[in-house]
Length: 464
Image 1 (cartoon, rainbow, N blue to C red):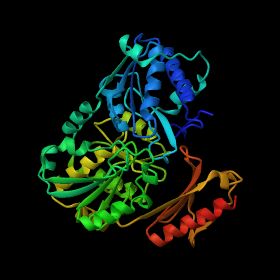
Image 2 (image 1 turned 180 degrees about the vertical axis):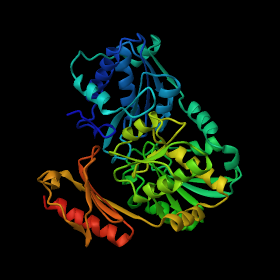
Image 3 (image 1 turned 90 degrees about the vertical axis):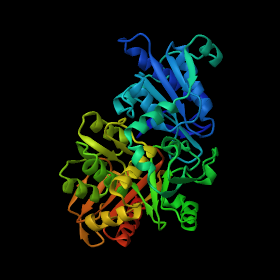
Image 4 (image 1 turned 45 degrees about the vertical axis):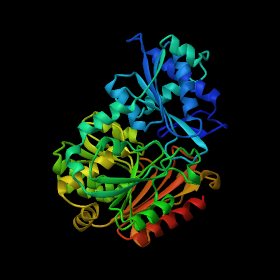
């Protein structure tokens, strides 16, 4: 069954994610566009990542849309997802499509839809596309014919992307930094864009896994600590100041400090929020998802701005950007977006904003971290995943604990899943919208407690 989840439609290649099903989804997208009769000439931009057959799937989408008299611009190479989002916004496309399954394992591929503003499609859009699946006759045409009829053009989308970021970031100040940085591209489409944007500088950038490998070297292209053994080992040997990790389609980020410690977005988001609001003087609050860290609320309070909490999925944060309510927003999984850019996440932009902060503050990353922890305290975050097939009942059938390792539960948040909140800590359960798993999340001011909460959560889920 074709079903759009938290961010796009994702499925296992050759099972549900087939050329035939991609054609069916593409026809539904064409029918959706043709419903809007305000403009006769519809335009769609299409990109793809480095996954197995992504280029071919992208061409398939293009050929279906072209056959429906929709003008298509197809990327001439694999690109980060935000490249397509920026094209939508700046070149006024009616929609954007990118073939990617983001951080999912190699056996998956997927299709994301982007709005004319560059945001992730919300439920109203994807629900309408789903309702049109298989409702009209499928049309397709040969790509050579599509090009000949000027219905499809293949072009470079990356120049506009790099030009925009050169203006959005204070590149001149960053060039003066003397740093040695390691970037793990995780075999994804992040490539060397940051280095190309910076041009000649005092920053030396080395790469890991920046080659095309659709199996992702046997790991999932997700910037989590369990996938970063080689990076951390290389980091310690090479005397790097900082390491950056991008996911499969380069819209998420994680970091490793100069001592080899993994730093996730629960720290990166509030750290960059300080720079956006204090140094850049950006107006607006901070957005986080329901599994965002308590420290984000603390930073917002200290900065005197609102902290907005959304369900999981960047599309909800995108809405806050569109309403001009926030200047920065992000997910615990590493997707971070910024006011004045697209209402979408971008790992490379987050990397550049961090470098800009280091230049503005005149401090190394480890010093920024130490100052952050000193002022706001340490919070420890942990999570695990449980296959849905291991669970017999729904999460709603779970018998909830009344305390978390002796700490009384003060309230329950059901915004998206089940979040049990006690003083300075929480435990949460949620069925993933992108994979057949149940996630268990926890946070505490003690690393041991956070891990104990996750263990308690696993026990509760397996008891279903």
